[in-house]
Image (cartoon, helix red, strand yellow):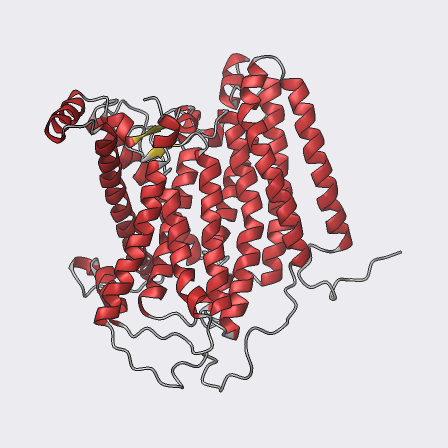
Length: 136
Length: 384
């Protein structure tokens, strides 16, 4: 078929459409069937029977802020690796494997240096304050 | 390279005749219309089958856990209690829907939907058989990894929007866990993409043979390790024990879905069980030969395709069983151990595997370890 590159996206659109339809149908069916008797106690946040104090949207230490940053770097890395990796076999068969391999190694090497730096700084530890003191 | 289920059916003569006949009746070219209808029907079948798998997953979970703990498990509804999931679904539909007064209403309703949305997106590229798969996208692996991240957004939003402290903690844990474990999953998948030389699931599965010796898991020592890295990280991606920290019921009540009642909770559970199946089937397709079996299944005919589908589902369900088995065997990790396992063990190993696979491919011209052993007469080139 001529416009195959567009056709191949139709199943994805259909599947995502089904997600919308199923969610709406289920919610509608349940809206018709279910009882609706809210009261103040029922609508308060569940804290094992205690009266909830304050809101959950308060400031607290999310712990993994630096890990989040490392994740973004690695995610971008894997996105950049996808094209290289998927043509590597072809290039290898053409006899250009060595050059590409060196480039892959260089690219990964820089990232490994980055993660090693984070590791030695202790950013990969969940609880930083309980780290054993380093010997000098 | 790109092909859909409609491409497969258009190979048949009767399909063309039907299109011509319909065009004659309607008075215009109905090829596109018929294609959309065929795809929609197939998608309808696949999605319903997957919802059945998700539903039966909850039953299997309870029955297998009962087996492992020397109990009987559900045995009242239907033969051997197999209709239990239908009864549960009906019950959840009829339960009152409680939205906490202080919650963010829009995000609260959006979160379960996003979980379902992300997981249904992955179903479009699952390589269930060489012809019947909904679509063989030539960036299939990339698409699958990308769209399954939406599930993580759903989990975090669910925790955030509830405005409950348990949910917030669960959502935060979920976000950090899913985000972190995506790296080992992606990197181990990349080392297989490297060996197959394509992002298309059809090419990846086609690069393997029916016999286990031709599977990518046994291609070289690095892909063998990649399989286990993938399995561990995929467990964490799907929030399965021993990595079920976002919903750790003994510490966080039930984590990110504490405030969810009725069918919204049901949708979360359904999405989770389908995700387990999707990740198991990706493992089957990438490492365990996908729909290939050691003997001839009848090729491109419709019966051969259905048999391929059966082979693929069987392999996936075997992995699914192991996933449930693991859940009822291992204790849960602590949150800090979880991050240590991901960043200090799995990620470096996955990077090592990727580099090792690339070097292997370059050094041995893409031959598997078995081919090398056979070529050298089993003398010294084997390695292990």
